[in-house]
Amino acid sequence: QVQLVESGGGLVQPGGSLRLSCAASGIIFNLRAMGWYRQAPGKQRELVATITSGGTTTYVDSVKGRFTISRDNAKNTVYLQMDSLKPEDTAVYYCNVADVRLWVSWGQGTQVTVSS
Image (cartoon, rainbow, N blue to C red):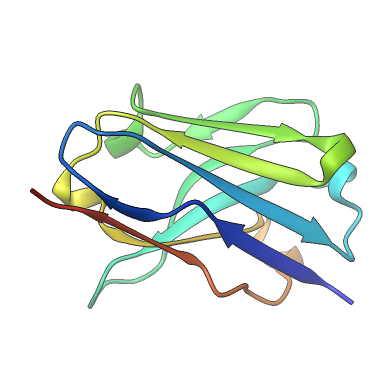
């Protein structure tokens, strides 16, 4: 059974940091490129960052230099370190396989709110 469980969100002031985690089960995690996605109210879900099985990363321009994606294949977990957070980063954050053709069922996501 496929399951993605995101955690680590919360309320943080502008300029603050959060570290998100996503524990995956039921997929061949160590062979899959994984991605972090986010969806803000009234907006479409967007891909924020990806990491291949070998550790190559990509980022959307709006988070480059502030967010860092990483993974621990032994723990079937992918992380998103978010620094210098801005109000526009406010969204529900999800993880999933990076390749849209291989998406599995979405988890519940984790809410990130950046506000003073």
